Image 1 (cartoon, helix red, strand yellow):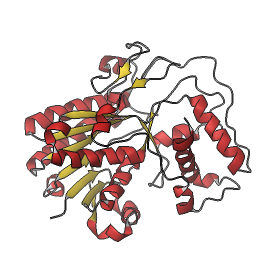
Image 2 (tube, rainbow, N blue to C red):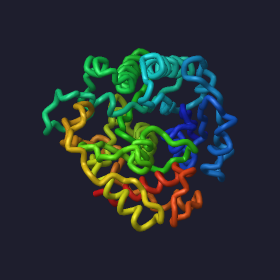
Image 3 (cartoon, rainbow, N blue to C red):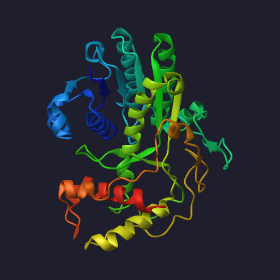
Length: 355
């Protein structure tokens, strides 16, 4: 029988890419979303030749009993979790992440699902707020300082930290094989139609929102690499479960400065657009507040050797201009009604050029 995978949050930025990769690898895929009518046709079009292997199911992390959805699955890849910063609080970010994780694990146990691949984040790893030396190398052994996160009301990082800790406890309680992916800020090709939070960070350098370049760095990783990490962890776990499961996997492709990001944006704009873009050129002389990762302006050092051991190369190059061809963007100007397309092109270019 073909492998059956259930991916929660399949309509999201990472979820959609994971659906695509699993279909391409011949898996039977179930995916959940709150609004199948909005997303089913688009998700089935990701791999048209295997659309018959995809089932899109309506579900809500907090209210749905996932037992029958998961029954018969070989693995659940739990990618669904709220990711937004403005207006975030315990009720709208922490509770859905934590209770959604509980709901998923309880259903996996009831449905006898043996394996879960969980999407956590570096938000659960490097929320240090200055508690690490600049030369500290980030690894899977690190955990965010939850007290500091709460003190600074960093509810997204609180949500990822608490949800992951709960996942480890429930995996032990229910004897479920668990591997946890800890990606940093994810950039790359946007399969969903809406601009996501991580991509919006770059759009702010294109639309005039930023007038100065932030005097700091940011750990980033390709969405294709993160999706592939989920799949490879499962596949390698089938071969050698003792090596793969019970582990966290740090996923970082680089830690560029925002000045490097702005330079790549400017370089691209000069050769591909006829419309002047308000990309800032001056670095803010003031350092941003101390928060995630190394104290600004230092780059966060990291070790991704564990992910490499299961075949994940977080420095891989996305096919350049794939998104442009697919969506028909005209390079002589910028259609600001197509922000998603424009930012997608930048991410594909950035993956190749920033270093």
